[in-house]
Image 1 (spheres, one colour):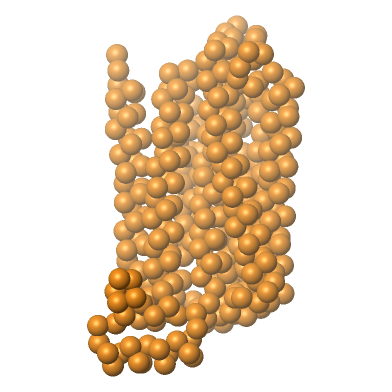
Image 2 (cartoon, chains in turn orange, cyan):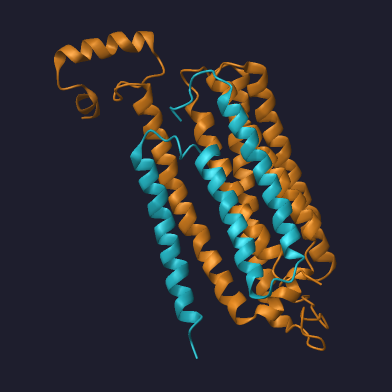
Length: 244
Length: 97
């Protein structure tokens, strides 16, 4: 069934396509040209990213509702997170997004050293992000800010309301959202690192050419999306009410 | 994706300009958080984040140069449904007595 479906309905064009395949082995025969093939892959990734927007959107929605209800408690809890580490991680991810576009450009213009260097640098920055995230999680663990039996958030003042203290059970909701949202984001980073390791190995073997570099473009779309999620997570989780 | 596939150096300039704009936005959002803007702290922070996200999507993810209109349709559809989710939910919760 499959072979007959894939065959072109016109006998003559089958010969032409077969002929072209020999010249352009990276062009699959059900696409008219490389541009259409690239567009199809890119569109598929964008549809996946649209589902990811909905996936994270539910968490952002939960966050907004609880922030609306317990604003003071959220502000107090937010103040306990290390803003400098969060800002550093934002800069680290922006740098990694730059190395990703450099990798795509290097593949398109056949610059092998820049391509391999950019992919390696992207992975290094991704690992740096996760390392800094680990330091943050460790701080929260030491401070007993991990939701659960040993959670403790006593006598933490609500910013802008002298004499008022945050309700620990409301603060616990903030930290639950903090760990689920940053944890899900970190999981995406780990998956992204796996994708980029694969891209790095393929680039090392010389698989990418100016004619064929769609995997780098597609992997890059995923990496940039994860960056965009962090661009929103940073102000929402770290910067609720920071002014003195 | 298609508009700048030639080996010109123009995309590089654009990439670095966007990169520095994103770093500037990060610094700006940290600075704005230390100011007391009353009810405007959150809108300013989210505004800067949206500008940054738009820059990444348009130029790093090549939505601006996308040859395929369907890509733009998918992006707009995703944003539309996200705003529907957040907007309608919050108009409910924010206006309860």
